[in-house]
Image (cartoon, rainbow, N blue to C red; front, side):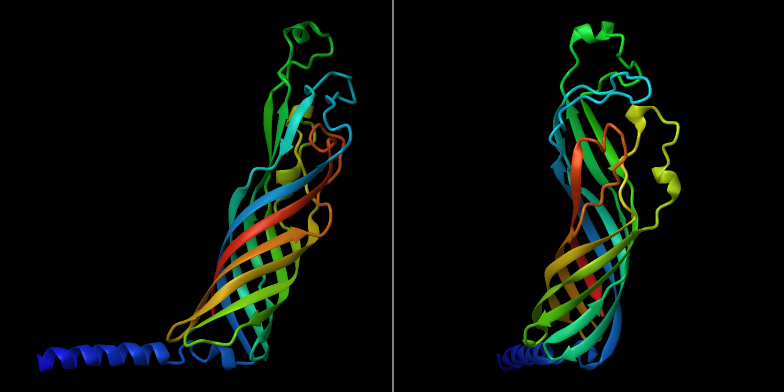
Length: 258
């Protein structure tokens, strides 16, 4: 009985001591430290439509009808991933300045839904047989982004091996994808691409938790970013014309290791 009780007390002492240790490798005491991150991303557009967005599109060169009147434009979320690097400058016990340059692989999708074509349309001389008057078309914008988020991290006081934080800041994004992904010269109107601007700025805000282990800390983080301006490249196509503005929203779940 005494041996069992001694064993339980020993285990309790070890567990209590481990929980109370100031783990994390002393990373929070350094004026400047580095780390890396893995990111899971959900991307979608907020779409503002033009007043005449429902109108069918006609080829400006030969006048043939390319699409039926439109019913809806939407942007279903699409997933991506990223790899990042962390540069953290300690300002005080509860404030850090952070930069997290990252390489992001994330597609975005815009879905166009059209009215079904009436049977009489097949006898219309302006009918474009190449388009077949599809009732639903998804346009994917393929992007490989280099991003530089810079922000302030506001941390709670540390409780043993845990602390919560809030962050806010801004992000510069640059598309480094091959030009082949946006080249549609010579394509028929229904195969034209939807294009984005190559550079833009975004607001960011998020929350997270610092979890301290013996030699490092891990920080799960949830962040929302929202582009400051319209990122649509406005050209005369069936897919850009109905849209007045597009704002990009990113929901990012990250794991930081520092």
